[in-house]
Image (cartoon, rainbow, N blue to C red; front, side, top):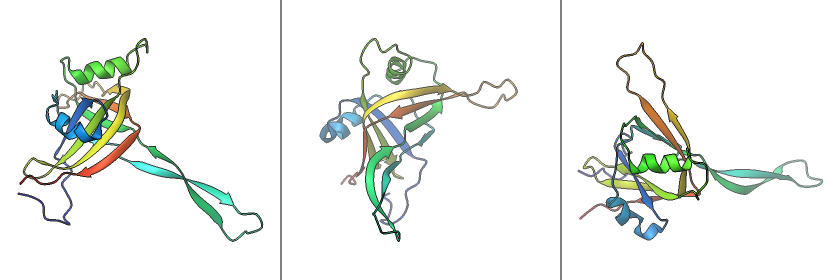
Length: 169
């Protein structure tokens, strides 16, 4: 069942793929074959904004020129339950955040897929030249026996693009 055009998509069904390389043309095929080591419960930071540079014109006090400046992106934040196993994602995060920079940082492409009611991707955000900048383990609390330990991975990237995924025939 596909969503009718003009209706907002639900935000609870998504998946994440981390792949090597930055060729946008082959990213979808590569992401389909990527091994997902665990699901994420929350993703935030899909955000871009343009700085505005204000320039006052000499002799004119009625207004200030506002010109576009540099485009900036927030870090992508991935949150999930703490998984006690070695995974490609954990190794990559450990190399970037926990490493000594004795070897070059390995950038990857991170793809976030928004899934429709049928489980198929409807939109994808592609983050190029991504690398982990922060890794955080949630609070350990002995008084709360029902909570799940989480960890958060914060990822920096150079560019993000949004693509509508055509419905399968």
